Image 1 (cartoon, rainbow over the protein chains, first blue to last red):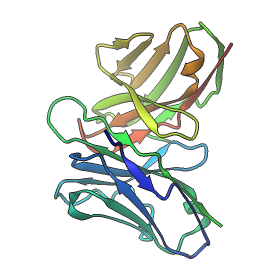
Image 2 (tube, one colour):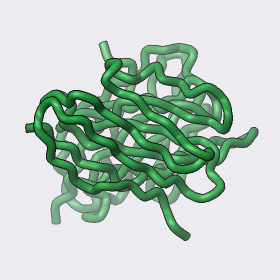
Image 3 (cartoon, chains in turn green, orange):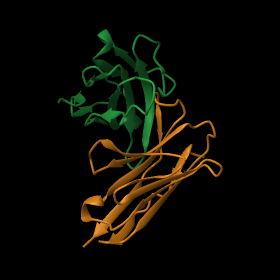
Length: 116
Length: 111
């Protein structure tokens, strides 16, 4: 079946411009996560959506970052007034939410953002 | 100090070698523990969960020491295809919620 998809796969933008990154989770997965990975670094949590609950935004690095999830499915991560330090790979993941064993997070291929 | 710390390596080993990766975590409230594998320029994928009693999956053995806040991964009889970055991951929230990743340990298996 289809995995997590993200678009665009690559985005080059100029400093100060806004960008939107899209994530399509696996069908039926109610939890959706955004992470970013800078060069040579581990993944850094950004935001987490679960069903209709208020999202966990504790990882967003500044108020230039925002995300929404419409209809409990597709999510968009928006970065306003991009800075060079925003350059990274932005990864989306989704998982089922249920009691019991760990609900594996399945990652998309990521969007590689380069801010010039 | 990072919440999850790993030796970044790289570890360069010959085929057939046994290699061990270590990881420490600082938050004693962490509840779930995992090893993910990430190939170059690819997304991370779950390798295995780590249970308190230790667990094995083929050539891979994972161990957890909650008292020392220490996690390990042992790979026996290394294959060329094991070359990747291995990410130590913890979850504070049980079976859902955000994952906290270590920086990763890079393994290069040589012929």
